[in-house]
Image (cartoon, rainbow, N blue to C red; front, top):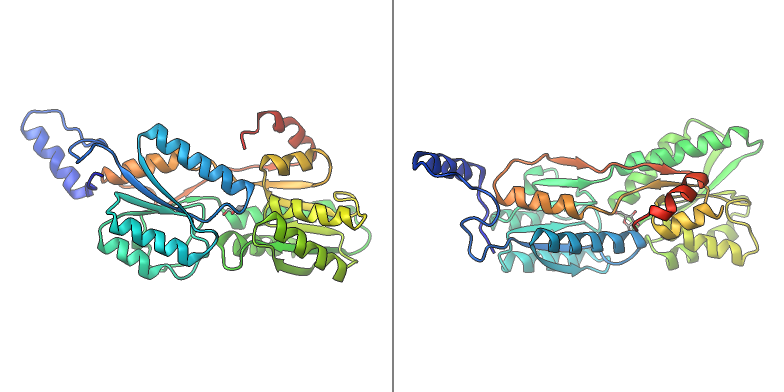
Length: 326
Ligand code: AHR
């Protein structure tokens, strides 16, 4: 564990080093207890292929960066994440990072971290806290834009449609930033075409099993549905199983749009079972470790760091698959 150097102290140290005629080194590892930064990371869970890739990216990059990582899996429960954060505070880690299960309800525990002078970095998902001084930075995707890209593809694809375009939406975990934002971005985009209607929308918890279960029920209740929009690949893959079991051809009888672009999703896209995927990158580890070092060094970091992402059609998926890392 090393102690964080505040911006003011860092500046003071540099001045002192300059006055003494020595080279100023405020880099990580200098002047600390055991030379290693300790990062406490409270992960959402292991609900999807995306999450597995995200966890791997964080664990591998911590190792590469020489950062001592304490890792916990909250099994998609906010109370478990709060417990993990409190335990990191008690252990006096140097930095806490976490991907909040839901957006609301973090002010108290974030205040406890602030009072203990432990900087917090949000990764992947945002919190709704009004007081942005409770965290240093937020690194992750623009989920509203992801939903918008999904909706824009459908508007374009529906230009040729003669009849109504009836959408079933599988939402991510209720209250989670990607569920809220992918829903609103999509709704905004499809307003452009009155033919397109969301006929049913339900929480599929970002998992394949729940996605399958919910899709089965919703397609039974809405036989008129001819499009499925799932907030992640895993729920889309579950829906594909449900549709096939009901004798339908996914990608043809029902057009499917998902978000993430993990290997299983990209494979289904290349096979014609999914029609369009909006990418959401889970490879946040290397950038997170850089940020952790900067924060410990007392450097000022951008408050919002956006991940770069693309989209994939079936043809693009075929070309990209051999190089796909996750
Ligand atoms: O927060 C990112 C989302 O969480 C991913 O799209 C989803 O697969 C994951 O569970």
